[in-house]
Length: 312
Image (cartoon, rainbow, N blue to C red; front, side, top):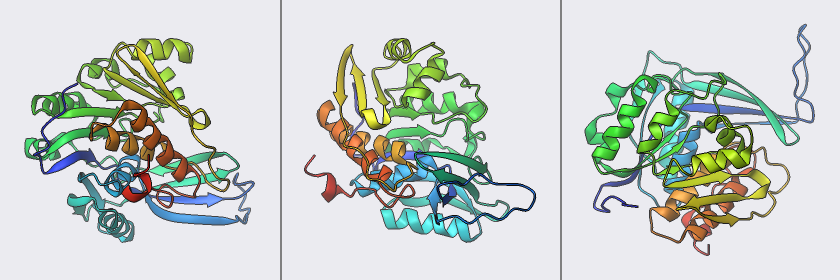
């Protein structure tokens, strides 16, 4: 698989689904209408967005990352910008737009499950006109995430992938969950431009349209050069040229909520892959990144730095 030149200014470019996460935690977070006030045991407020969490983790692992996006001229927008900078992400292409409210997702987290309420705001504010050839060509690799939430890009997202490939970039895709339950947007047509597909087990089955996980994997591995499937507590598996590599994962520490674990997994895998590490090592780094985040509350606290992952 061809990887583009290391002479590019950036290793990775990513389109930011900019928002904050408000995570409310308790044994029972189910709201009761009728003006009933319930007490919860704790909360976190921090930068969210799958692509933003991905970018922060990739930068912490030593990758040079350029994030393109928009935020509102508000407290949450400033929180996002400060968090990206502290992680080492180049946020110079993030536009502060006073006409926007920064997006927010409220997570209701209990036990090992959670429900989410999202106000898109800045999440879907990017359009194809924002994605210039100069921005694409500045990086070796394009990581495309949050396909179904970034609706401003959807009409031209396949064209963006095609342009990226024409400019010599490799491309990875993690669609994330589809809140509308349609699982389309030309996904199958786009696979010809994808080098690495990174779904979890549930997403793989929905995206493939197959009735079970085994047939979903069988179908998807024939469509892309490298398929990597996240299996939560079961670890992860990768299929390359018909060969399968599996990686177990240590159980996450109790008290975590799983927010952003899959996004940090993606960043860990690409940090290995773009450095030409063996597939087994890429999976090991990815699983440890995912486990570390899943062991903490929110998507950022458990993220590993390069020194943490060196032994892997």
